[in-house]
Length: 114
Length: 115
Image: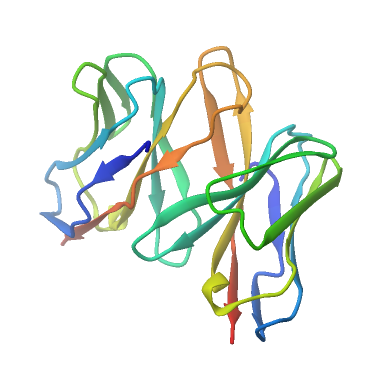
């Protein structure tokens, strides 16, 4: 399972409140990703990190921020949650070789914003 | 805009049959491709990866890549009810180590294998 955990696994919150989701990995992977998955849209990249304190935006980064102060932890923050951010959030890591770079996913966090 | 297209299904096949899942991609520069299986309420699980033209086999699964036609497929032989899931196709712009390029996912094809 690539040693990835996510917390919390489920969360219900109210519009306007801040929310932080945590992704933790135990295998010292350099690259980490946050995706959201919505019906009709598939998986979409929010932000990714290529090292401690090194992050970049993905396709749907508006309304989200990330931080990576340690190799093992990648945090996703919704500064002021909105109903449109109700989704399932997946963290992923990547393992690369000379031939191919493969991503593996964590178990996911189901977030409901009321 | 880079896109990966899949038939949403559902694709229904009888137990023991071959299931054929297809995917096309728009970015001609894409180098590597992935098939993930996702059970309802679970996270995507890697089934196959491929970066060379032709076929790659792993047990009951065969991935096929045709870069000239920008087409990727997944064949599942001797389909089982436990194969019932949504299958996600993804492309990656580079086949080098590192992740400067990020995966582009299709919306998935739902497969149902009937006993």
